[in-house]
Image (cartoon, rainbow, N blue to C red; front, side, top):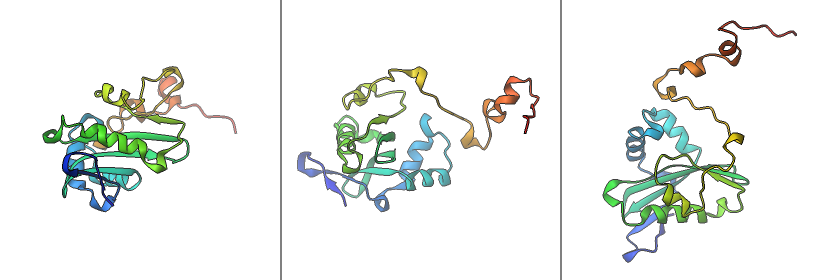
Length: 172
């Protein structure tokens, strides 16, 4: 159910109703951006189906989006946040983030994270900070996965990378 946002004339609404999402708009926007460049529609659909999604609307038109991946107990990852260009500069991203952080299923979490190239100032207003101990964090990142390829780094096993391409057999 859409929830009116406290703006002039309640012109904007935020909803977690996935049936209301304009998936074509979201996919089109994300597939052209660095964070999900070239993401196949099937992969995108799975990501929506398995996330808590927030649509930002002006009337029936979707104008923004964000999603949260969470266990709803300890951790949440915020991703794919955007407001379409025509509606930027009106505080709508702040409104969207405020609503996300206030969502009842996302309270009491020990850790939130996100990955972004930009808008650090915006996210800092909501408590996000650079990782304090980056040496403790690890990731697997394969930028070629959406192109149907495995990157060189991910195409070999650890053993192959560190043994000149030869696999060693472990004792049974």
